Amino acid sequence: MTSRHAGSESRHIARRIVIEGDLVLQTPAHFGGGESDGTTVLLLEDPLSGSPLLPGASLAGALRHYLVQREFGFRAAEESGSLAAQLFGTAYDRNRGAQSRVIVDDALGSGEGHLLEGRDGVKINEKYRTAEEGGLYSFNVWTVGTCFSLRLELCLYQHDPNDVATADDADRLVGALATALTAVGEGQIPLGGRKHRGYGRAKVTGWRVRDYRFETSEGLVDWLQHGGLALNEPTHASLYQALGVIEMPEDARSFVRIDAEFSLEDSLLIRAGADIVDMAHLMSRNADGELQAVLSGTSIAGALRARTQKIAATLNVRHAKKLIDDMFGKYGGDREISEESEPSASRVIVEEHLIEGGLFDPVQNRVRIDRFTGGAFDTGLFGQQPVFANEDTMVPIKLELRYPANASEEELLRVDAEAGLLLLTLKDLWTRDLPLGGESSIGRGRLSGRKATITLHTPEFQNEISLRDSPHALSPEERDQLERFVTALQGLRRG
Image 1 (cartoon, rainbow, N blue to C red):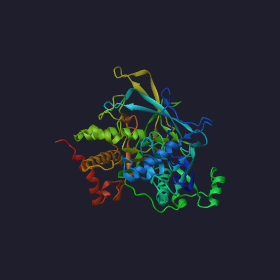
Image 2: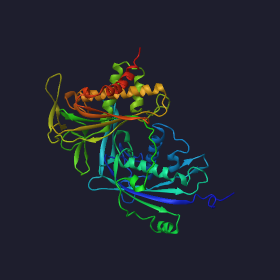
Image 3: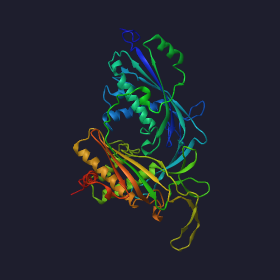
Image 4: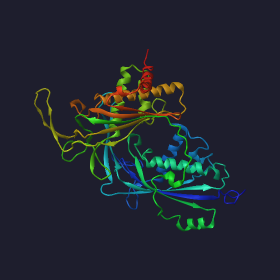
């Protein structure tokens, strides 16, 4: 039997491309290992320095998943010989496999001021829209501005005995890795937990690249002397330019994306813990380290889910609960896994945003009234500190509905109906009919639409539809495109 170290079996590494970059969080991120301290879900930290830790396995998994989606579509199975398999390895069977060509280091975080931030969550009863008993929990996140030092190495071979990839594939592999890393650097690939609700988006400031070529003895000696050191190369704004990439993988994904801006009509309160008042609006640190009001992705998703359920019930849509669960995800709980209870991830992606403008300092004192006597309850006085609107207040909302790959004609009609549901909820947000946050019964959380861009993306075409102040500004063709989604929803009505 020939040794794997023999020349005929060796892959003959021809090049090593080292890529470094500074990844800066644009939204809070949770990189955890599932451990908790009581009801608080903890973050991963470097055991020696206590610094924030982004595991290399998390980054590699996110890059691989993105490439599979881009090559085959959302919820598609990875195929043998795919770009992701060539870059990140694959298992042929229990005893044989190909190792990853990409070496991803753990990244340690750094930053000024407070890096750690606490967030609260609560499970809401879908029927009564109140908190479930025992449904309150908390978790920690790394704040906006936390910087992680990324380092990756791509190994390219002259020969691979398993024929997974050869030197002829170098341009495709470099292009694929550059595309995935660029997507991370532009915030298209969120990292860590709760990424479908806006966490873990980042940008990379300054890519550094060095290409070690082993065809010559000088290149090999250069690698042996400097390969393990940090790069001092010039920074590049574009990774494509730094790597000389011309060929990029085609995009097989299909989705509908909504980017909208709203004015706040009155006030908004997403509750968070506070020291001075009983209830204060959720705040988070911006890139400058200053506290700023936040519209959380979980609040948006919860309001959208509740409203789509009402719309589906009003229209008497068939299998409405299954439709909503497939859109926003389903929690299987502790029940025995079956077709009805198996959990699924959300296909509606919601981003978290900082609220521009607004007044946060005023405190509104309120009192709880005894409905029987008409007087105040004992100890019924409480204070609230919401975000109050001013003329500069701007609330951004970004949504994305992903189409599953290889869908049948019937499944495509159902997903078009889901897009119709999202458009109807956008209309309700636009016309102040769908409030966000808490205390909606006293007038908080009403929004008014300013502008929106609806992006329709498929492998065959891409189109953008812009809304300004009034939907009457749309062309007949654009109206027909949007009406198609609502018509598909009407087609699911019973009877």
